[in-house]
Image 1 (cartoon, rainbow, N blue to C red):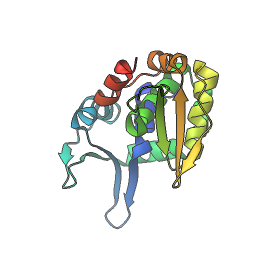
Image 2 (tube, one colour):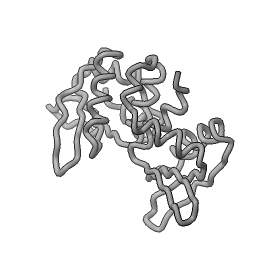
Image 3 (cartoon, rainbow, N blue to C red):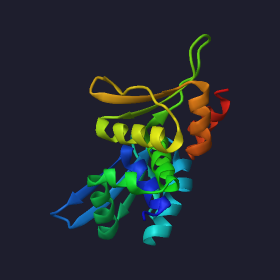
Length: 188
């Protein structure tokens, strides 16, 4: 069985990357975000618990914040799991919810609702197979019925609409990202 913190890190890698620099013998996992506190409060404690490392959160020239985890063990565990994401279908609901939460925290949004518009949250990803997996888990495990995945400018978009579905998402999945969790709470 997969560890729920590992599942969160795996999901959050939806907006991160695995870097192997053969010439330097480096194995690196990078998480990047506009909000430093999400990296410090959600990513870093999991990295410390699972891998015993305390990488620094650094601000880049682009004003984004980044954590770089240098670990051959973590690199191979995560890259192996990324290549076999369908194995998540065999995990329990807690592991699945942590994976989806990590993914949503990295790649999701809660657009402000305009008068007369329906409630919605969105998850974006270039690799639509990941969105298909999330869609399947949401509907089969949590009773959340997402819309069909759309594609715009080579980016896939998974929408969850209706007050009932979003309420289920808030309860079963939730968010640890400071802005996204606040936006979910303020939606209705």
